[in-house]
Amino acid sequence: MRCPFCKEDKDKVVDSRSSDAGRVVRRRRLCSNCNRRFTTYERVEDPLRLTVVKKDSSRVPYDRQRIIAGVQKACYKRPIAMAQIEKLAEEVEEEIFRQQGQEVFSSFIGDETMRRLKFLDKVAYVRYASVYHEFADLGQFISEAQELMHRPDESSDEPGLF
Image 1 (tube, rainbow, N blue to C red):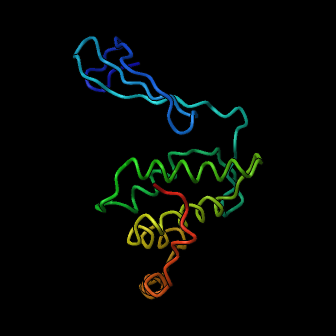
Image 2 (image 1 turned 45 degrees about the vertical axis):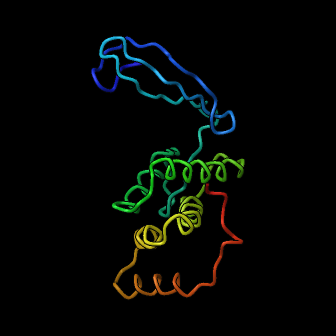
Image 3 (image 1 turned 90 degrees about the vertical axis):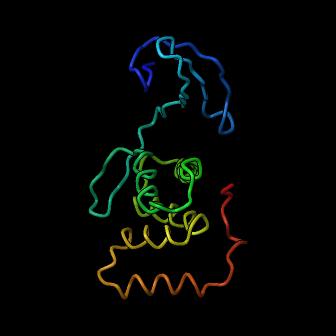
């Protein structure tokens, strides 16, 4: 494993533990060259390659990083920790794999992401919705924000986010 600081390939594992209910191994490493610590995560690569069916019916390989990148953009300059974003992506991914198919629609991924983002941060939710629903004008943006403000407390529907 290359050190992210000095790029040397000499390190040792200082601590190793299971996380995310045993699906991920977290390793703390110490670089032998610069003596800095860094963390790596190992997860099992799914033997079934999952395909995402996009709005235009094209198909692309599933990539968890796309969920994370989209949520990060929506959470820009919001008080949301990276761990919260990764947890949201993990929950969306779990829901995707519960589908037990080899294909998943991008709309399903977007809906699951939005459902969880609504409870994480309402501003980020509206930002994400504006891109996801391709708002054409300010009126659609305002309408979504007003609907969110006037909804009754939906905490009973809240996914298990933290």
